Length: 149
Image (tube, rainbow, N blue to C red; front, side):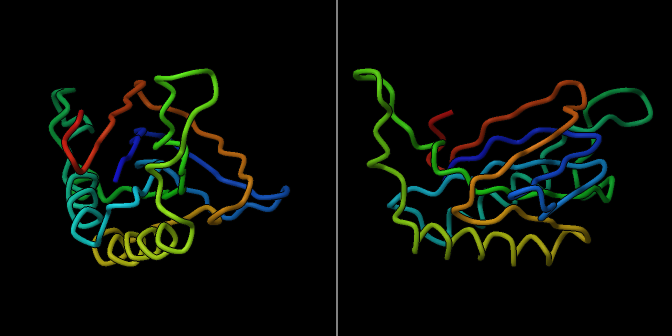
């Protein structure tokens, strides 16, 4: 699994002009699922996301986690995180999970997140989405369950 975490002061995702998810201070996570992923990878990425210390404490040091600040989480599926553009000009998505598997793990991730975070909002799986955000910092972190980065 791969994720791009963006610390936000607010974020919103819409489908066809309809808002499907909106948060205040917290993390927007773009989540990609590979064909080899399982619930184990989802739990690992969720643990990292919830506990990653990317929010400032009283001394302006990034020392607090999403859990510490009781922030919000907006989860948006993004299969293009597995786009491989090393050859040619068109990315290959062969490493991305098939839609059925990807949706199952995406939904699992969201369900587990709701056990730890009070406000978890989502996009709509396999939809063309418009994502708006105010990146706070900016702070953007990439995570990979295979620890490639």
